[in-house]
Amino acid sequence: MRRFKDISMYFLATGAMSISGFILVPLLVRLLSLDEFGRWTLIEPILVVGAPLALLGASWGVFKQVAHDGLPPSLICRRLLPAAQPMMIAVAALAAFVLAELGFSITVAICMGVTVWLEALLILETESLRAANMALAFMLTQILRATVLIGLLGAAMYGWFALVKVGDVIQVRLLVAIVAACAAAVFLRIKLGSGGTNESAQHNVGQEKMSSSALYRDAIKYGAPLLVVSLLTMLLQFSDRFIIKAYFDYNALAHYYVYVKITSAISLLVVTPFSLWWPNERFRQRKLPDGGRGFFPQVAMIFLTILLAASGSLWLITDWLLPFFAPGIPFNPAVILLLLFGGILAAMAYPLNVGLLDEGQTHKNIYAVLWAAIANITLALILIPKFQLVGAAWANLLGYAVYLMTFSHFSQRVFPVAFPYGRMFVQTCLALMFLWGFSSIIPGDSATDSGVRLAFYLCTLFIASWILGIRFKISPEPSYCSENQSTTSS
Image 1 (cartoon, one colour):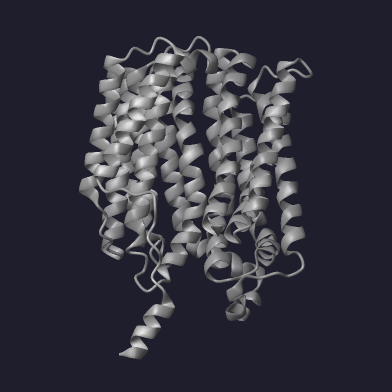
Image 2 (tube, rainbow, N blue to C red):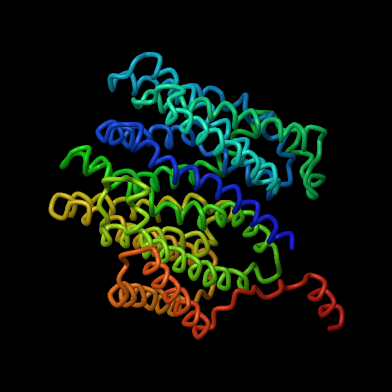
């Protein structure tokens, strides 16, 4: 019951963020010119990359220190924040310098630098909330963040203030970061300021007495390899934008960005809640007698089914959704379908990568994602000039295929798990066949037609999943007590 409650709260939190991210694009399309919107798509990665880079991976270390080592999250935040300041300030200054060099005003450049600093602080705070399994506080922080963002953009739509340039968008993001960071700090103070700890904190008295710099180094030691993985993954996500811009204009880039944002709804609604819940659960399962070997394959099959259902559903309704989402952007079914299945491959790396998140193994994640990044950029340089946006989507799909295969390969070498790869492949092929069949047989000229196609697709997918032996029920965990009793009986 507690597991379902936590997942529900994470789902609500990411649901709020996904709704805000979904609404953000049509609002910006309407507020900015198409060229200015295309310009924003190249500036946004600075903010997305800068915030985690400013922490040098310490946010992942925080999760390990709280969820695995049992240290109080309030203590972690108080100790790590002063030690992290030199790098946070340096990256913020670098972001401001980059914007100034790109021709933005000093005011806008400073706003970007401060926003990067605040976003880094917010990551540290929210990771502490999540590591401590404070799902309610995490949910409220993200809902507030989404509400303020949409509220400010909505006010601009009604003419309460002018938002016509990229600099205006940066100032809005700054205000949102201020509110969200303050809210997260309040939740940490209220819930854990009195010194509450995890159940296992008594085993880590020595670590609690560590200095700020020692805790910071410990966090970076665990998290830095995962930061490199994250940065390389962002390279997978953003490199195609810059390659498209190198060969085409801002108009084509704006079209591709809209397609990416539509398909990212699956990531926000399905993948992000799972990824927020997964690390804590994975650490817990690895401590069980079987190391989670009975649990991980079941979760992987259920997760794949949900991904196929959600991605296929989105593709079947996008043709009538797109005119409301971004007027003037044409529906490109091939690009959107390829991007959706690339997202499925990327998402499946979570449940299939079990071994590389063990302490002392995180650096091996770099090898896996490096091959994927090289494949993605190479394919993008070859395919985009010839096939334009379809080439970019194919490069994305094939890059994430390499991503999934390399992660699974390296993880299995560290901690073998009997995943049902054959059934996963068959299920994916069946989903593609159903999508092609129903989209060909049933026209999608209206919302009713799209609804009929959607109903047929979901019914056949879940029937096929049932035949393949997939059940939306996870077997009970092995019990320590049962194992001990059997040992005693022997």
